[in-house]
Length: 311
Image (cartoon, rainbow, N blue to C red; front, side):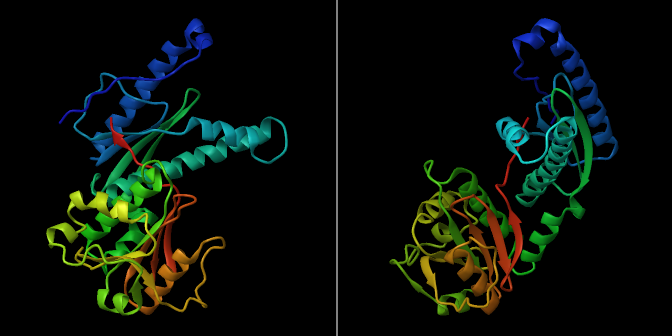
């Protein structure tokens, strides 16, 4: 299906008066047309626009996504971050931010790929602002996040990993009814995990039908997010059956090494993966950070996962 969009942006009255808008629009269209031609020549799986860019009157069969950036966060970082004074310091900050935006775009592409929204292959990214822009070609097969999540799929089906991450990312970015919250989902090796835990509440999944206790069924995700507000962890099988919620993990975590500042949820989640072959997914209440643990160690940390939307 052909993609078509419209340019949308905000500009100061001074820019409108000087005609910089028109120049910027013309340059933007040239850059995006170039990126689209490159993506078509490379048979890319997607095009991702990041920053102050959208597209107009440009047609392609390649899916196009828009990743909205937090401009206030960028400005705050440039103004308030530590360092010396002068043009060189400001330039260094801008360069660092450029690298950050490239890494952010790669992470967005990886997240959408893991969730099944972008197929494997090259992704063409366009990172832009009013002052500058760059075209990036990123190979998802070489993405570190994708590689590490593939390790989870050696123990848990990819469909279950995808469903669990969907829930984790949603909790990390939205919380529940505007309130921040954290949770942990222990997936796989159910018998051993149940032996090493006890209930904090009456198990809400006891006696549920297979359809209503299957995490692969999207209509169950809201109830999982609702129950995630309670203490305890979820216990889920490799095939996606939710066996329990509100479980307390009875583990010895004295030799578990995790990042300082993380609480009991993360320590016990890491410890249960040391004692079993389960995979633990955690969401931090304070920072919305998603972590995955395997074999008692942190496999990956996804800081404030960002999503993109179809353009």
